[in-house]
Length: 597
Image (cartoon, rainbow, N blue to C red; front, side):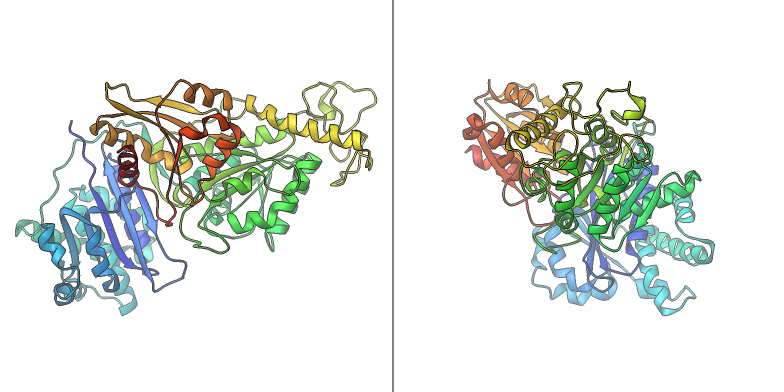
């Protein structure tokens, strides 16, 4: 079967209910058996500004990534119409409100219609809405449902399937008026298809038994992983784009009817991290979630947790910085800050999920790592993964039992127990919990093995060395890099290193480079500190240039790799993406080809 991967931009106004309508279309395509990916590109205001929704679907799972141009573009927000003409591919389709006709012809970019052979389709929204009895504010919202039904017919999605999705989305009090709008939009699409104004896509033979059977975003995956890991306390403060992690935990907790996780909204991030540390110290499996500005506020407390050896999990759903930055745009800009999160010789264990499935598995793993090593573990997701729905595979319940590390009440009694001793010579002490006979004062100041205050130079150097060795021992249990290669005969080749959401475009980049007679070896980083042994074997026998691709301006992963493996620095070239939009395969491929010339 020939691969297909159509794409669509929808330009609307923020606060008009467009996201709900767009997700109905996305869900319809998913339930029809396609692999799907979406990008909700929205402003950081409540209502009024422009918002765009990107949707791509395919019979191949890796061909659902973001593109800067699409095959179809629907515009019902006049202020962006001229700019949107730049986002349509050659021989693409522009769908507009019929009221925009004259304004379109006077747009500076109108010449692109003829140059790129773009078809223009006009929907008479005003005339359609006259057939619906509803108040004016409701009618404004119904434009989105008319658009959704129009597009569903053009994309040849079964009407009964779409009606079922509509019923799932809306409550009874607003279902009927949305159904009416949907039917009228469908009727308009059939009319325009019959008139030859727009071509209906063929009904593709989809993979109904495909392995991707869930439609979720990374924050849903994270919430599922947190609850599956037995999290008992989740303290948080609202911040875009991590807020929905907590909201999903509360929703899932209620659905499970176990109320196993106490979810507390604190007054600020300082309180959130302090409550989480307190819960971890008391023996609970505890976590919080935030974004860059919140992580900055949590830094000092995380240094305390590292030094006092208290287990907890912190999710950082990254957004565009510095400072407040662009709260609703994506980035991988927190990596270097997170790697050494606090002052002094503090180092972090970081997990780097690249999709919703890994948001589940890595959140689950993070709790066991934190408790086995008695230390904070950070999970760096980003807005692109966290807030955008995409198809993914079944999430299986982990086969391993929950691990709580070395606790004094579960260990054979140790003579002369000390809270910071290393009796097993694995750099990890035996921890006691409140209520036991083995009490100690948990200090953020210098301390000896007994937990007593100490400024002894030899004692302090031994303490820091043990903490460093404990940190390095995490490499035995953190996810290692994954290496894939394209085995094609070619005159030239490259190596690629990426991580997080950037991973989602790499397979498409590999295929595009193959068409340019260029082979690709790819290493996907899944955690920090780096597994330098695996990375050395990847780099040492290669004379190929190595491109490190990431979504920040300073090449932060390149900095960390160069610091760990300076002997390979001359092989590295950064490809950085930092405009707030998701990274796309075509721009990366173009930069690699240009670099090889």
